[in-house]
Image (cartoon, rainbow, N blue to C red; front, side, top):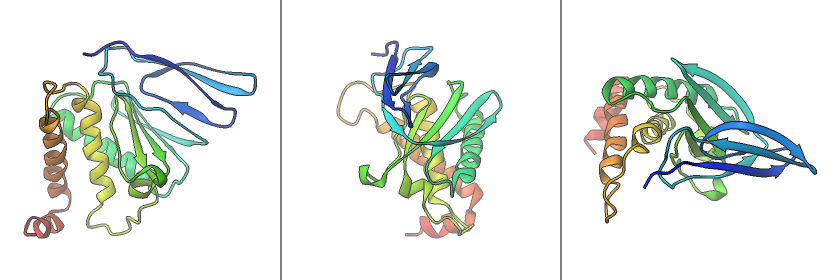
Amino acid sequence: MRAGYEAIVSTSHDQIAVTPGYLEREWEQNGRRYFHYKMDEPIWPFVSFLSADYEMKADSWNDIDIEVYYKHGYNVDRMIDASKKSLDYFTKNFSPYQYRQYRIFEFPRQRGSFAQSFPNTIPFSENIGFVADIRDPQISTQFLLTAHDSLISGGGTRFRGKRSRRSNDTRNALAIFSPDGYGARIWPSPYAAISKL
């Protein structure tokens, strides 16, 4: 069941703490930083918390603020490009992105090699996005992972299946199929080779 979400998160004085929602206010007290986040609509009870000494690069797509919080800046521009193209593609083919903000956050590889979508927040492992070697212009796994999690962050957090085994299959099938179709348009020859495997 979806419900309102609001959190005050505390961290050390030199870090930024994040969770889904929009930043209402930020302050320092007793040598710690505090961040008050609040969603403006009900969400599923599935959230994340991150804290790090981040740098941030901002951009926008239409009226959506795009922010990438990172320690390693090698692929940030490509992630922003992937975010914009994905938001455009998914808006045209499914529905508009439902949040005013689209944020990606780097986390250490010691926590795993994955990205996970939450409302307006996508934690992304450093080794599959931020420090991956993407010099090959033919295909970018990192680009497609960004596209995959773009769909889940927007449309995928909007609905859930009945509480049963495999209830997320529809959502994940859309998130897997869509970037593949999208990727085939961007990199036709590698996708033709991959489809024969």
